[in-house]
Amino acid sequence: MAIESRIAKSKKKPKFSTRIVRRCFKCGRNHGYIGDFGLCRICFREMANKGLIPGVKKSSW
Image 1 (cartoon, rainbow, N blue to C red):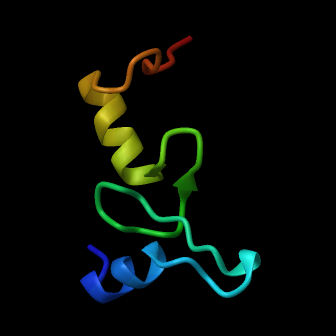
Image 2 (image 1 turned 180 degrees about the horizontal axis):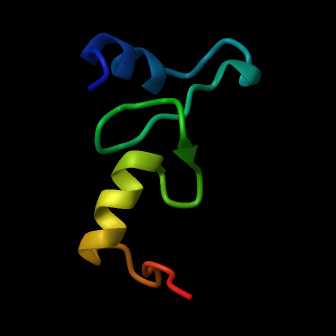
């Protein structure tokens, strides 16, 4: 879980556009961020396995 101060800092508008920090809206993690869903890889996998993300299912072949 990310520190609350870092989450608050990332929500502010940065001085330069290249300083934008994208974080998971669920846990606040910034690495492994999947932009299409707004989630980190860990939260994405948990929610996809539970069937909470529409249109996403576990692949099998």
